[in-house]
Image 1 (cartoon, rainbow, N blue to C red):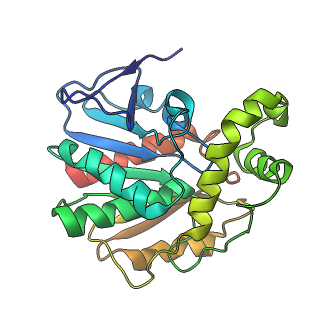
Image 2: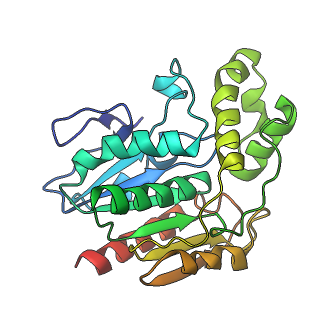
Length: 258
């Protein structure tokens, strides 16, 4: 099992998880945002695929795992405000953001907030498995019955439905899943806003809910460069393609940071 370390800056935060090892003389931080219904463990193996001079943080919002007793945040504005408040003290190093699905939208909003309110330049924004601003299609699942909601989570994440057969487990995980779906479905990205950070977008060629042409629309969300990479696989392509994806992320970071 991986171990978790706390902040290398000397300031602990419930909002971030560091898995496996502590960065050695880090040159940058990679902050990762999970998909709807997920948690920080989505990125537990990433540090082992990246060099020791990258400080890899996975965001852990309230209402899941070790934060299960805290109220779920189900509005984008509140989530972003709270993440940014915790992240600003860590911007003593360049901060690159990666987000998958819901996490892509959160990473985008955090980038915009850092730039406009804190004068922090994000050198690179990496978005995955989500259509660009103005191209998302709400699916109306936030208030669906439990079975429908869990079926969607399992379909997109490739989780085994048997994991949710235990009623006590369902009772624990459903509030955060439903809260994430509410957050996604009540959020609308400003279509006329651009960030100064260059954007790289990733997606699976066979994603059942996100079309490649809609992911390409992220090009209009940046005033700098844009690139798109399409992997084999569906919405959860980043699981079987993890090594290739993380290698590409590493190469992109090396390119912008030198």
